[in-house]
Image (cartoon, rainbow, N blue to C red):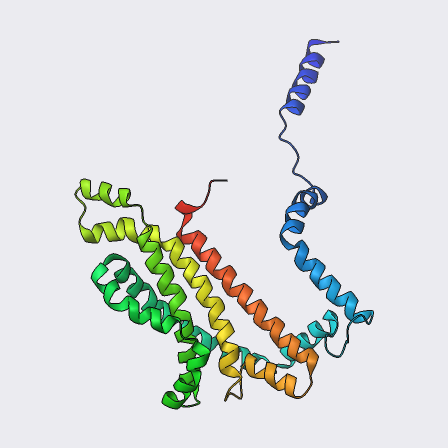
Length: 283
């Protein structure tokens, strides 16, 4: 074998040995992700499969528990025809205004109460008293004061969503490591700098926990608010479908609410990851 042939063979072997590994194929990636997917959503898939089989096989009354494909078809038809679009817009407007007001009041008030002990001592008994009173029990009072219009519906949602974000913010401020605050003081940081650079960033994860709880509460109270004195909204459609025995449409509206709740939670989780990258574990 000539020198050139030896060189060519060795070069080819070297390139083959140092070639980067081929990207895994689609089947390989699916096999790698499948166990984690089943561990996370396996019970949900099993529940949905049991519902579908039970309804189609007659194990349960299909007029009370329709098969899932009929519920999904009812949801799709309602969305495609535009029948539910106005209800979605009105419901999101009600819950969105109430949620935004709860955040705008609850977060600043929680930050103040968490740091100023005198303010917490003055307001905590009153807040605890109102927190223990069911928002639904107060709804007739709000209707008497504010009427059956939009104001009472938004206010009842605001009332219920205020306390989760407020208490989470207070707890987040109180759980800030005191050693970090002392270290900042040692380096000559003032109270405002300590608040901006230490207290507020350390409280953000707890605040987002309160925001997620408040978003869920907003959707739960939305149903109750729209079931009384409303002629639009997803909650109204649930009650209207139940009165007219349109069971698939009733479950479709309930499914839509669940999907909206999952979407709101996913948006807040994504926002938390963007704002709190320092608190995420390293991959």
